[in-house]
Length: 222
Ligand code: GAR
Image (tube, rainbow, N blue to C red; front, side, top):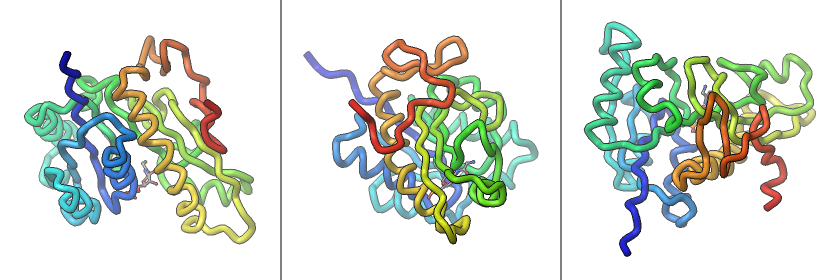
């Protein structure tokens, strides 16, 4: 019997693309049963586009400044995703606020990673805000994207201790290492059909996930 085709992924980026690279590496290593079919950037100068090209993945620059509204920009994204038959959409440092034009058709098939321990610090400058607040730990959260900015149901969360002398940059670098572990794993679960958005909450193998997602700190126990 023939195996079903692996789901087709689009990764949306705005910058460096280190999470995109983690996805490329996970696919190459057989750890993510999916094909990265398309990488889209709203920023034509995003360094991540070159990572995609090196890996032989089709790229597209859709510059938000060419569109009169967020909705018109999102419609251009949806058109591109539809014409490439994309199953799952991965936001990897995609620094645009999305509208229902994109969120609705991909609800439950759209993941984001945010560099904080959500629900703490939605929005920007998360690491600086954690430092300014005197927090002892920072981290990252993979979550389903819903209409609420950085507020969709969390899937996986990893905590990273804040060290004496940390700057936003040094902290971001340590958190990024962990992002590269949790994000392909969450995508794997989605690609395998184990992870779902159900009645407004995230489920894994049919079981509801904790409010802040599965705690990956220190790795997975099973
Ligand atoms: C990552 O740290 C990601 O968590 C963050 O942007 C960075 C992108 O890095 N995303 C957000 O802040 C989304 N609000 P990368 O381009 O090297 O993957």
